[in-house]
Length: 60
Image (cartoon, rainbow, N blue to C red; front, side, top):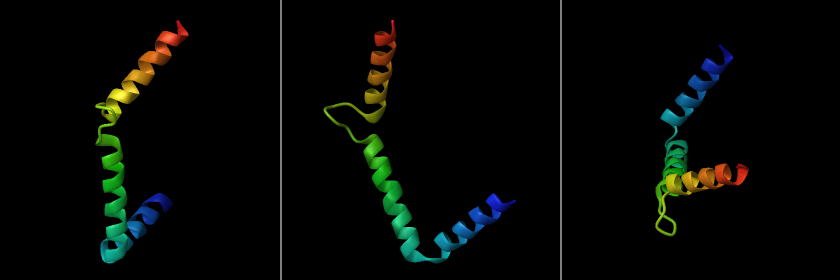
């Protein structure tokens, strides 16, 4: 119940405060950009996949 009330309070603050809404949007946008941007021709998903494959091969 406390989680719900806390979530509702945060939602109201974000909905009624334009500055908080802008900060949240900027944070989400920068996070999405970091995940989706290409680095050395590879996306975040490719880099994670390579790391997992490398770890699996190292364990054998």
